[in-house]
Image 1 (cartoon, rainbow, N blue to C red):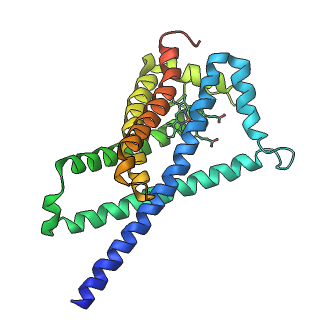
Image 2: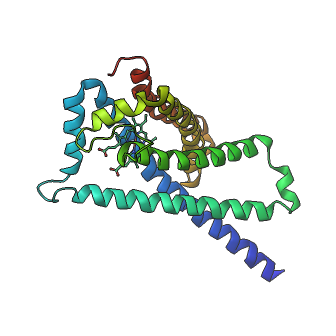
Image 3: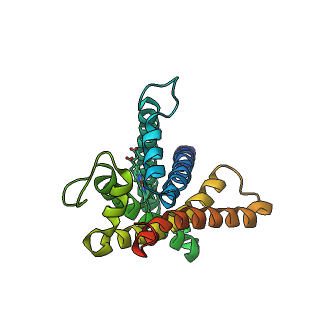
Length: 233
Ligand code: HEM
């Protein structure tokens, strides 16, 4: 009995630890997507403005940091956050699968199961999206991007979305729906894990999660939509 309790307790503890990892790395991700979405909106201000911004990212932290140094530090932090986020998600998923055979799980609400399903499917879609997105607009892999130019980020975005009968733009828009769902459920889970789950806060935090999801996913969607409708050319 004692041994079993210790087992359950350590499982619980390790699950909490992983959930905290998910919440903290998720918060880093939210910070990143807010800045990235805001930066992308500069595409509405024209080629020069956008390219000056893209080049300016490399001068981030100057004169204390050298060319691209702070950018590379941010990339490494982001990469570590993504790796930890995926690892903890996978590990929690395995724990949940193993717990499925015990009978208390049957009492889980359908709603909670659906939320878990959305967040998992959304997570997988986003993972695939990020790889394709990097191949498309950051690395300009031939065949994925039709005409990549290292010195013209604005052109890479516009030509990248216009190519293949706007298929990339449509793919991005679908991915942004997945991003919205993932952010909504993820932000909500994060608030709970970080201990803000007092019932008084339930409604405001749900609303905050919803607003975050709509502003971020909606803001990202504006650029591909504007290119599809010829507002950005
Ligand atoms: C319509 C939506 C999006 C557009 C138009 C867009 C555009 C861009 C552009 C132009 C770059 C390259 C900047 C450069 O190298 O100069 C970039 C890089 C990147 N984007 Fe996006 N992005 C979008 C959505 C997203 C989302 C939703 C995520 C993450 C969930 C994301 C993650 C990244 C990452 C990780 C990089 C690489 C950053 C770096 O290494 O410097 N992007 N994006």
